[in-house]
Image (cartoon, rainbow, N blue to C red; front, side, top):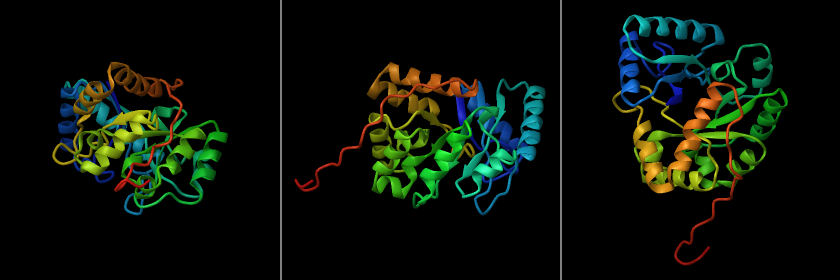
Amino acid sequence: MIDIHSHILPKLDDGAQTMEDSLTMAKAAVAEGISSIIATPHHQNGRYNNNRRNILESTDTLNKTLLQENIPLKVLPGMETRIYGEIVEDLENSQILSLNHSNYLFIELPSDSVPRYTEKVLYDIQLRGYTPIIVHPERNAGITENPDKLYNLVKKGALTQITASSVCGYFGKNIKKFSHQLIEANLTHFIASDAHNISNRTFKLTEAMDIIHKEYGNDLVYLLTENAALLAENKTVYKEMPQHIKKKKFLGIF
């Protein structure tokens, strides 16, 4: 199994703080059946400032240490990029790192909104041959209040990735419910851990897949796990026709 979203690299952001933390996370990942994991430290989000070069160097160092410690996990390079106006220029200038050097690119939205320029930026990214993947949309207030914002972006070519802990309910019942609505509406294409540590932000990937298997069947589990592998190999991923999330009745009134 491949986990496409993690903060396993040490000392780069709010994930692993030491190499020992990284090794502990790696052991936990292996215990979950994860064989490869994409390290996606934050690019720039007001608190951290990582670039292509230091992420590649840190990934190489961690892989060498994992080999020395006989931990059977392969770390692949990536980045979690908060959306901003000049993202296309920085992508062309090799300041931004795609996922394992593929044509897939993580895009993080602010937690409280969907910026007005989002559609334009995602369109421009696609014009350059990249596929944007919106991370954890289930935790974005602007999307939970108006799911059609996400539907519109997916309809126009963006993909999305839901956090495993959201599917399991660790971020609360409302986020869990919305995560399942996104799954049912074909508005997500990947489940990943977004693991930061092994205490309060751990993997939960196996648990999430077990829930999905129980509620939606093995075909969806296969699609989600296969999509992660296809992404890592820079191949075309599976996607179904997106649907609108139907508004629920409230006190008998639409």
